[in-house]
Amino acid sequence: MSKKKIIFIINPRAGIGHYKKVSRLLTKRLDLSRYDYELVLTRYRGHGQELAIQAVVDGVDIVVAVGGDGTINEIARALVGKNVTLGFIPTGSGNGLAHHLQIPVCISKAIQVINESHSLEIDTIQINNQICISIAGLGFDGLVAEMFDRSSRRGFFPYLHYVLKSYTSYKPQTYIIEEKGEKTENHNTMLVSIANSSQWGFNVKVSPKASMADGCADICLVKKPGIFRLPFSTTALLTGNLHRDKKSIHIYRLSECTIYTKDNTVQPCHIDGDPIKRQSKITINVLPKSLRIITPKQLV
Image (cartoon, rainbow, N blue to C red; front, side):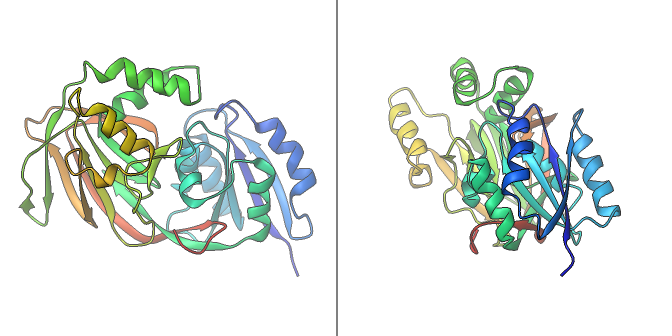
């Protein structure tokens, strides 16, 4: 049996920098009877996508992203609709997609998932002609993503610092969702989360029932709780029960829609944790089963 060609694309800046450990463990843990592998480092933003595009041209069978959700997104863009499988070793800060798919954050165990080579097809989301794999957002979480991106510090506590720093002063916006020409009622919310998977990261779930194989995105409109409701909403968020708090969140499950601010005010926006240009309007289309990905479980 011929070996499969596999390339590991590593973002050396992701998380706290595990790339040397990954390199060392690959020589020990990867099943070299099944794989011929190559390891390359990204040098700048967008480089991962360029390397993945070349991997497709070169006939590579599996492209493995080593980094956080942003790195996975960058590499996955080149693989959507292609006959190439995506794998990943999560070394980022939040690792939301890894938690959703139950891919271990332990590097050795993540390599073992790749050795087992079980794969399935998942949905992706096209947002204003950009690809989202896990979760995107308008509003407050986009603002936090902008600040976190500018920081040299990584991990949960720096992220929490920016959440707390911005929460009091952030003013909710009025959003409208339009589906097939029909408008919803106005929603005055702190943020709009477009969820293909269940969580932002750090195991903090915005839509615990989100599926990556149902042909829909969960459009989650999260209100800014008042001072007296804040402890209850925070507890619901951290325990995976925010979707049950009807006073704090409204969820639409849609395959396509347009979301815009009532007064056309541009808002911070992120896709898979990486900030993009601020938007006043985004168009969403789910691309069913458009990406093949290695996972340890059948269901997503």
